[in-house]
Length: 218
Image (cartoon, rainbow, N blue to C red; front, side):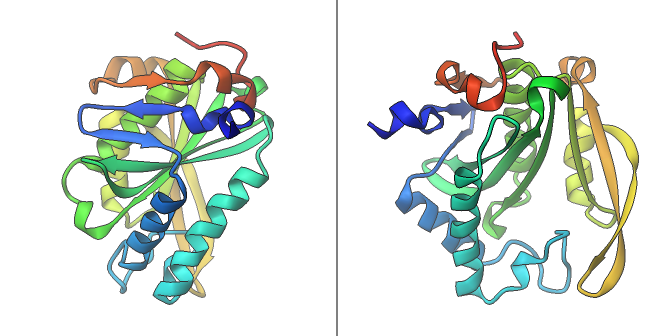
């Protein structure tokens, strides 16, 4: 079976409201259609790579291609796990957790998006809690990073709830104009002090070598 060669297919991260896991083909199509329907207001751009500027059909295709690309390029030294977020069995968005040289650095980075109709319900906070638990408790990370453009108040609100601290700024060009992003960092100790959402993980053990994680962090 494919799961014997790609055990990530069996990984599940659950919270009281959500399930995070790799989507099957039909669910990936649903995720792409969700992105085609809109992720943010058209007069703003919350992403450093403006993929949502693409026409709806191309935007949907880019979601599928990016998902395949991350799977195909996966190594224990450089990986990005794109977990579909399910609410009552419906695809609501995407939560990514990524690591480079994780076996040495023990650091994860996160990013996410939600379909418009799922925003403003606390789902973003809960899915971040889920993936932080996967990183810290499951993989044994010691730090987590995130960041957003300086006008992305909703993203910073989620990070603040989890205890992230400022980690500097970066300047970029998006849509042909200069923008500033604010980096954030969360230590294992601050995560432990702030963690309030009940999270469970299943199917992780056979995946650990793929992450460069020899054992769980506890």
